[in-house]
Amino acid sequence: MTQSKQKLLIIEDDPGLQKQLRWSFDAYDVVVAGDRESALAQIRRHEPAVVTMDLGLPPDPDGSTEGLATLQQILALAPATRVIVLTGNQDHANAVKAIALGAYDFHQKPCDSEVLGLVLQRAFFLHALQQENQRMLQLQADSPMTGLITRDAGMQKVCRMMEKVAPTTASVMVLGESGTGKEVLARALHQLSPRANNRFMAINCAAIPENLLESELFGYEKGAYTGAAKQTKGKVELAHGGTFFLDEVGDLPMALQAKLLRFLQERVIERVGGHEEIPVDVRIVCATHQNLKDLTAAGRFREDLYYRLSEIVVTIPPLRARLGDAALLAHHFKNKFSAQESRSGLHFSSEAMSAIETYGWPGNVREMENCIKRAVIMTDGPQISADDLGLSAAAPEDEPLNLRQVRDEAEHKALIKALARVDGNIVKASELLGISRPTMYDLMSRHNIKTGT
Image 1 (cartoon, rainbow, N blue to C red):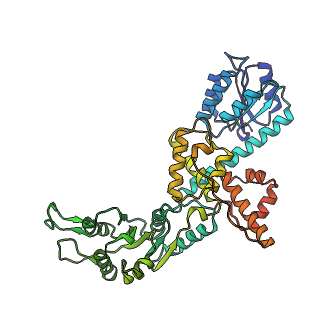
Image 2: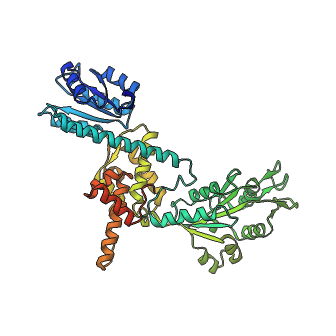
Image 3: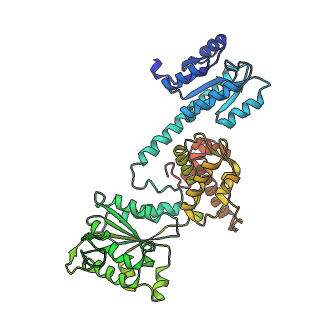
């Protein structure tokens, strides 16, 4: 029977209170500890989901120094653990300190077993939700769409489109502003395609000098030019059987545009300095932040090449147009970089989250990633403030006047923003919106919002 019970650790140095708490919460598998060393040993051994702890631990039973230090070490060992601090009536300041360090909640002594029982029940429930969320994220980690984190309907439409296109042989052009994730989408397309077991090769046309770009693309023969000491395959040939990604294709020189067009038509290449035609089977995916139609009209991009490359055109919306994604991505990057930098327990202040949601993000996802990484490294304490982000607020947008449309749009936006702000936690989102969970599910169903998107 004990194995089916949820594990609860009680950290208390008073033997009488230990017995009282153990008796009050016999519905749980209770383990106890009376000091920091034994508490940390129990954390390592049992990995309890929830902990109650008295801040007055030996050798400082009348103060809070030892208790706060123990709290920090517990959260460093097990960041997901929900710690409920037990404090005296006159110890509100230390309770606030404990919350700032990452404690889940506090409860005043003498303990009301019924009230504390409800707090414990909720803590276990939220821990289970968090674990389920982590499990779902782990399952998604094996998905080719892992790098595409979104709740926005427009971005989800892009993802569905890529899933449809992936099994085909069509050339794909990905359009979007710098930093929106064009290469991430191209890699996902490759992983979803029958070519997934072969190579994905990428080249940035704007990053390589024009006199070297042809050699990079098509390779060269020994002696083709000074320094060509051996035969070298180009990126296109190396991608044989797989996918070749041309980033910033709008910067491709006119001379190479003609050679790329010939390859797309004939599916053969010639290395620089060579005369042999080499058949290559690759799928071409290209990307640019430029308007290729304008470049074509200006004579800077071949029209026939444009139509060859754009059999399927996918446009990635900028981050500022993706409803709820700013907060969602902010949580993702905060979790990622907190783990990398060993800064467990970090969270955004409400002002920081408002700044994230209102900022225009001209550099899109790339800018956000850099911003959150900097904030995680530079912030003091467990909370990332608006000042740590260094973002400016944006001007409000005009809203429609039709009352029904205003209501529906406001309701949809509120749901998306609430879910994004609390990282997809339904319970927290319903609390944030001031509604019950059944109402939350009803509204999500009415607005076609999925919990896992």
